[in-house]
Length: 199
Ligand SMILES: N[C@@H](CCC(=O)N[C@@H](CS)C(=O)NCC(=O)O)C(=O)O
Image 1 (tube, helix red, strand yellow):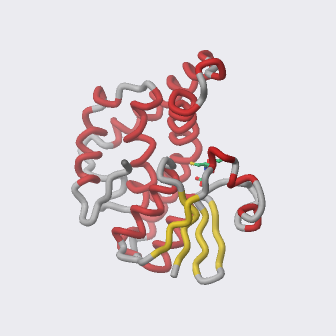
Image 2: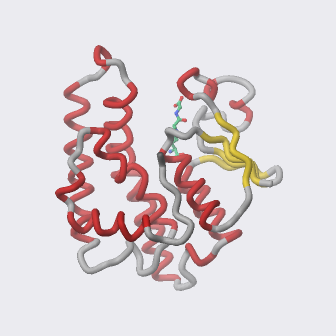
């Protein structure tokens, strides 16, 4: 059975969980307490020497990086969440990389600062920068979703990759309600079969 090194507060872990649940793949969740530094010491460092979750152990094959895990799992277990059409797959790769270069780094970090850092460690200049860069990516996405139900034609790994930190962006002090097309898209994602809530 697949083991998922997991934490309930992690949006990156949620992506993998959502994929596994919606694909009806049984898995064992192994909770790593990142707040106690468990990801950064033995024995977890043998799973991912970068000291980060999520990671999966798929019958001895170990993989980290949430979006790489989604692509691998889709290729292996649920091609419905990856298009059969090469051009569409190209778009999926493009958006899934955009997610990790322009969306998550800003939205997830802003959330982490506001939600988890003690007030004396919250750098307001850094927070403002992350919020404004995050908003730029949300503006671009909101325009893209005008007239598109999902990122690339049908529901895919990109929608799964994009969902958690966009959904949680309010925890980083970003008003997501002003993005009407994103709000409609989040509703569509939440209405897909076997959807689970983050928390
Ligand atoms: N690019 C990585 C980011 C992973 C990441 O930042 N994980 C966080 C939890 S969401 C973590 O393990 N933090 C603990 C730490 O850095 O010590 C991915 O997408 O999987």
